[in-house]
Image (cartoon, protein in one colour):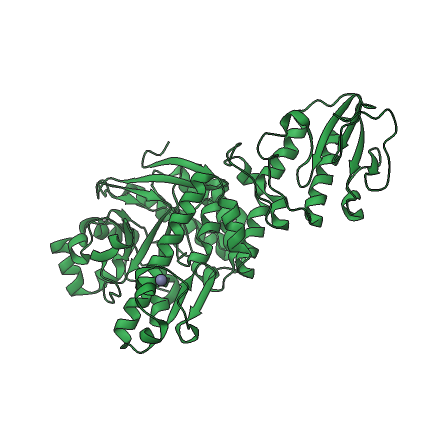
Amino acid sequence: MRDVFEIRAQDAGGRVGDLHVPRADVTVETPALLPVVNPNVITVDPARFDEFGAEILITNSYIIKRDDDLAARAREEGLHDLLGFDGAIMTDSGSFQLSEYGEIDTDTEEILAFQHEIGSDIGTPVDIPTPPDVDRARAEEELRTTQERLELAETVDVGDMLVNAPVQGSTYPDLREEAGAHAYATDLDVFPVGAAVPMMNDYRYDDVARAVAGAKRGLGADAPVHLFGAGHPMMFALAVALGCDLFDSAAYALYARDDRYLTVHGTEQLADLHHFPCSCPICTEHAPEDVRRMPDAAREELLAEHNLHVSFTELRRVKQAVRDGDLLELVEARAHAHPRTLDGYRALLDHAGQYEASDPASKDAFFYASAESARRPEVLRHRERLARLSPEGRVLLTEGPRHDGYDDCWRVTPPFGPYPSALSEVYPLTAETPANMDREGYEAAAKGVARLAGEHPDAEFTLAHESWPADALDYVPPRVETLDLGEDRLTGPEDEA
Ligand SMILES: [Zn+2]
């Protein structure tokens, strides 16, 4: 058990937790967003970060160390006074510069010692951020180097500073898993999924999802996970559902510099906005036209403030969704606002079995909001549960009325499939589903019927359905008799209960 992290609530792979940061003597509620602060280019004064809800920020120790004046001040005053921030401070090591420029002028021991010296609360070794799509030999070789650096980092005396153990592996999910397992076996504290920035910049949220899911398979459930470089609020819900606890945003400042306005659905250009679709203080007090007329620095600061507000608002919404048990409904809503987040959500659903384990067995209600809902962990879990039930004799599975010409009569409901009537008030079978179900919902139900028939070869099944589409019925094995309630009549004595 890692005592720096406590999980308070869970939904799908997402969790609300407490990250204890001993050196700062603060507890950060997760999921947490760390605004990125470039000490040379301050867009929003870190002293004001608590107005937005930031409890932790991230800055780059390598940038500070390379600048003699900054380094001297950081040594003298400490990082918290230098930046004017009394929350927790995480520092990066220069790995990003290494990935951008090919070399850096420091190493793991030196940079960890420097981070400790200037008062960082969470430091980072010099790992190798392997880009996406490299050949496997390179990904493996660089991962070995990263793993050596993590082992070296364990030996550096950094007092009560927490230390990041980045998880690399490029776009190879099995390497991410191996890297996760190795990092988790060290005594390091926080686990960033590294080198996601190039994928995130290209909106490759499906590859991000596969990388995170891979890392999560290797890491223990109690590991706090940081998605390095994830700063766009449109993907927070997805990233949390995948099991990420920390994010950092340079986007709030970088986008503001280019007159870009963040929303939970994507990015808008200030030039295109007639109205601000937001109720933050910036957007209620200003009109886009007025902001466009402002001098560069003032305009950039206002946009950056809006970008922070919208990001922290989304994070609060995500946390509430985890507590309410409707995180996947939120992910689905975000997924249907942008094709790239939909790609990410579909990649998450490819791993629904992995996320089923941490998903609470009971929540308020399951809302079937689109075809993707048919692949949610709850649907898989119900299908697994069919193996443990005991249908006997001739069993009617029906969407219509009960019929006493059978030994037993079960309900059948898309997308879940069959279940005994006694379970009909049990989550997720209380689901709200559309009157016009889609093909995926019927197919999922038919797979449930197939699973039940496969698990219980001694029972006989009749499926009485309300005109399911033929390609859904193709999943029902031949030994299950099917009746279309719209056309066929059940034989035997009528008895509707
Ligand atoms: Zn706003």
